[in-house]
Length: 335
Image (cartoon, rainbow, N blue to C red; front, side, top):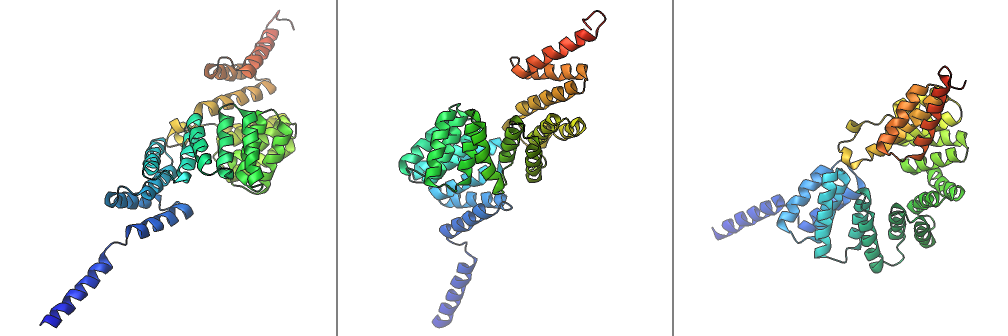
């Protein structure tokens, strides 16, 4: 009787162990592997991490991974949640230096470059010379309108790792802001030639080519960028500008229509620089209309730019030119 009972108890214990959830660390490791390798299970990962943190609310790794998951989902509201999770992770374990890197990225996405710089400065105290931290610090300095400092810091990142692609990208942007276009082009060409799926690299390089009068290369580069992200309005606007610079006004008009910004294209328009894109779109529309001699439409476009930014230099100058031509068309207007 006793032996039979013991057998029954052991069988029940084995069945219970088989049905019990795996240990917390094993669950965390599985979620981490998911988050670092795929994006199709992020919602499931959030649910799993919330269950883990209900069991162990002091798991710094759990809070860090939940912050990563929220960041991946991407809305402005969830980015705020991600910041909260990262802050909890640091409170529980200040040695998690990578959390400061994630925080800095979020702060830059949210336009809070000062906070990003603070996190990266603190991270570099723990990990001096880290090329990822230095490169992102350079971008924070660039966004803070310190392009010379940005160039210096990003070059430090490349001294630590000359093959680090993001550092070449950030250096290219900083050099553009510093007025060193030709050097910037060389850095951005490295990123594009490596095939990095970074639409902003194609946009920056294509725009720099236009400024340099290299319109064929601009058209090719911006077209490649649209293969990476066909819905990106800035790429269409820049390609329209390149076609206009080459005198291909029909193609310029077609690209501009493809690039018309739409608020509904993003789930959270407050997280997207819609106003700047619309300003750029109207400015390019005005330039194309002016070049085609459609002066009334050009004036309308430039006036819309000035509604966004009353002191906009190019729109002010071109509107004055449009008004001069309109006056000249009138009887007794000087022509």
